[in-house]
Each structure stands twice: as structure tokens, then as C-alpha cells.
Amino acid sequence: MIFLDNAGTTKMFEDCVEVHKVFSCQEFYNPSAMSRLSMEVSKKLSEAEKFFLAKLGAKEGNVLFTGCATESNNMAIKGSFRNGDWEYVFSAGEHPSVYNVAKKMELDGVHVHFVPLNKKGRVDLEVLKSVLNEKTRFISVMHVSNETGAVNDIVEISKLKDSLCPRAILHVDGVQGFMKIPFSIRKTSVDLYSFSAHKIHGPKGVAGLYVKNKNALKELFQGGGQQYGLRSGTENVSGIMQFKKAVELIDVDKNFENVALLKKIFNERLEVCEGVEILDFCGSPYIESLIFSGVKGETMLHALEQNGVVVGLGSACSSKKAGNRVLEEIGVAKDNVVSSVRVSFNAYQTVEEVRMAADIIVKTYKDIKERVS
Ligand code: PLP
Image 1 (tube, helix red, strand yellow):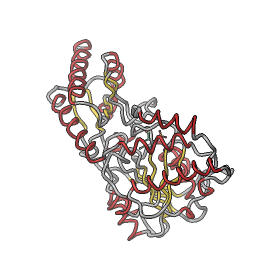
Image 2 (cartoon, helix red, strand yellow):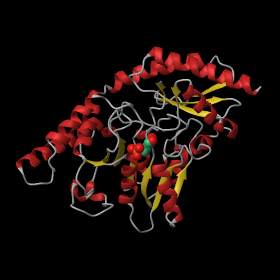
Image 3 (cartoon, rainbow, N blue to C red):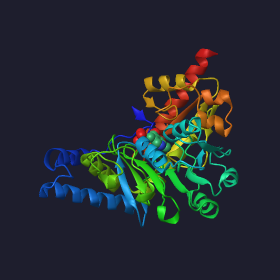
Image 4 (cartoon, protein in one colour):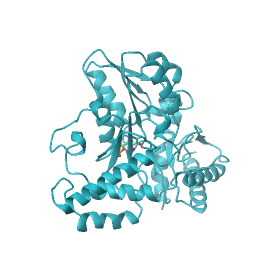
């Protein structure tokens, strides 16, 4: 089986299993307890926090460890919310874990702006500029689109924030960018940045939220006061240490180059097939969409799985709903949207694997077309 749904989740590095054993069966102590053994674990968590800050390129701030990036995103938005005459700004291309929170806020009567995407799948900077003002409290723009791979210019967005609404909080959902796209928070005005372990060969059930100024965030629930009082509950020590191990094993630049090559080879095989269109937004090499003229994406997905290739239908969390909000937002024709599938690579796949996958995709499509014509 060739797995091309790596934006949905990735296979965990086997080295993480060893780390899990150590922190579940040997150093299993509660980091908040008073024993020397617990304090040792607590020290390792502090070191892990510093490690993640360095990997993000942050020169200040903290990292909160959460259960998933959905939680990180909810914490960023709801923890920054304040009553008053404020405006909240979201890109229209956000993942449901941001978009649906924004929609709910709007329903609750909060002043929310959704900034459209341009034809390249990026947030429209002219429109963004036009909505930012001194009442803007919060801006959320994702780093890399989970649907299209389009990359938003976070440095440019930071400059807009600094000049038009310096008091606003800038949140970036970095789930598809962290450890995949060369990036440093230091060069930006990002206040909050979400990232997740299971997208980068770490375990499920652990993620992070970078917080530049912890005093600007409110906790979502009360409890024992762990993690600066912002995320009560005993930390998932094993998950955090496995996440750290996964990050240690990744070479962002080398992986980026490798995936770019895989995508090029894959696309060369597909672009010669009549009826197949590659939606390339010239963004992250890890993600792209394919349109199969005259065949539903869902039909392709199931036929491909039978033939040994697993692809996705957009965001795993929302793919059971018809259509694709983000592709429609970019202006992809409705017929093409229903005929689309998402392909996403990982850096450890081989040229042979992606060549074989492309050949299977072409054959599967041709067989279906022949059957229906
Ligand atoms: N944000 C983006 C851009 C994503 O792609 C995903 C997962 O698909 C999430 C957030 C949610 O991540 P998690 O599964 O860790 O909740």
C-alpha cells in the first residue's frame, strides 16, 4: 500500500516507541509531584519546552502542550477573546478547527471578518489590509493550507499587523508548516502558533501552542494550574517526549528538497494523462490536489484504495461532508471540486513508490472512464 494522505496523518517514527516505553514504564512520575523523581521529569518537560521554542526560532515566549492542534487553535482563539467593541479577523481558508470557531463567534454576535483567498489559494492581502484597524483584537491566518498546500506570507501579514493594528494578537495555524517549511517566528510578529505531532511522524494525542505573551491568554478550563495555569491537567509526558524525538529526527531543508523532487516526478507522470488536472498552487511541495474530469473524487478514492494507493478528500476532519469549502473559495468550478482528491507526500517515500502510485492512478482513472463511457 502506498500512502499519499500524509497531510491527514503520518506513520510514527519507530524510535518514538522506545521513548514511549521509557516515559510510561520507567520515568512515569507525575511532573507536578514533590519527589525528586517527579522533579527530574518536570525538568525534562522544561527542557522539551525550550527545545520546541528553539525549533520555532522564538527568542521569547512559552510552549503549551495540548492534546491536539484542534485544542491549540481553540485555546488561541477563545483564550484571546475579550468582551468589548473588538473585531476578529480570519482567513476564509482556515481548517475547521479555526473556521468553525469563528463561525460560532459570528453566530454569537461577535464582529467577525472572513478574508477571501486569491486564485493562488493565499489570503488576499489587499482585503486583509482593508479590514485591519485599531479595533482589531485578533487575526488568524494559517501558515500552509491543508487543502491546497498554498503558503501564506506570514512576514508580510506581520508587517500589516504592526502598521495597522499593533495591539492585535496574530495567530498562525502552523500544523502543515511546522518542520516541513523553513520558517522562523523570530522574523515575524506572530503571537500564537499551533502545531501538531501526528503530522510529522510523532504520536497522536499531543500538540503545541507557542505563546509569545502568556499574560495575554486566558485559560479555557480550571484545575491544578499546570503549564502556567493555562492548561491544567497532568501533562502527557510520554507524548511530549515522543513529539520531541520526532522533531529531532527531521531535517527540514533536506526533507523539503526530497519532497519537491518526489512531487515533480509524480506530476510528470500525471500531467500527460488526458482528463487529469493538477491543481498546483506553487506552495508546499507536501500537498496538492488532482482533478479527475468526469469521475467523482470519492469514486477515485475507493478505487485507488482497492488498487493499493491511499489518497485523501481534503481535511480528514471534514471530508465526510460534501464539497470542499476551500477549493470553492478559490474559485475552482463545482464540477471540478467534486472530482478532486488531495494527494500529500512524506519525505521518507521513495521515487519508485511515487512513480508506481502515479502509474496506478492513471490506470485506475482510465479503467473507470472506459467503464462509464
Ligand atoms: N490545522 C490544520 C491546518 C490541519 O491540517 C489539522 C489537521 O488536519 C488541524 C489543524 C487539526 O489537527 P489535530 O488533528 O492535531 O487536531
